[in-house]
Length: 351
Image (tube, rainbow, N blue to C red; front, side):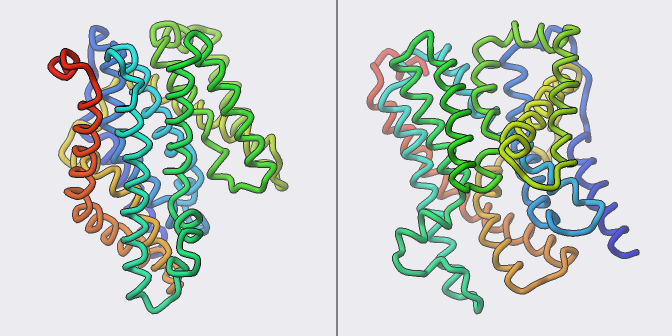
């Protein structure tokens, strides 16, 4: 009984955060920039879902679906990042240059080092061996650091190369490479996390570049039928007992794309994430996502019940996020300033 009460309270609180103060908006708001801003406002909420999902992913509870939905939440981050870059590429002169490398891949690489140092510090004082201090240290850094950072760095480099040198073939190139890399990584034994939500990145670029066309399509009869097909194909993975390349790569990505399209439908009618809690979560979304993993490992090493583990992980993650935020903000500011140095003077003044 306690488990049901706790789970319903979590679901109620999470639903309240998602839909509190949501408002209808007029059709005049339906610009590409409005969609992007609305989606960006949801970053913190999706980061929170991922933390909760990691805690309950193996628990026999009504919260179990949140563990499964995590791949859609990760896909959301890939999608929004790509969507934002496509818009920036169109609006900002000379967007793809050395400044992009500094403010994107190099910035993320620096964050990975910061999070790894934090993890080593926790490993030092934790009575259980979390394997962050194993030798050689570089191997621990490469294998223990959050996979999402490495994946995003690869996507950013892929974006840089294709948008700078391939011109009108850049979208086709990124789509093909993403699919091939996902298949290759699956065949090489990579976990579901690496391949199950990867298609969201090229989809974000497509939406960013061809927003009006995509929006018209998803509201057409063909678009609705496509959404139904993606949803049914994606959910079919739940019926497969033995995982294979179809279920892990294509079915799960289909489910991710369907969830993003549904989110685009919702954003067409409602403004979400317009309240203080969402703004708070959004402010610390990067730090929440990155700092959660060490606390997930610490609490898991003690074998705690999920009703005890969840508040501990959330509390430790939020405290870490608040402590890391000034550092992350300073690092971001440093690389943004470095990137502006490499831009033409007239562009620095404008942006």
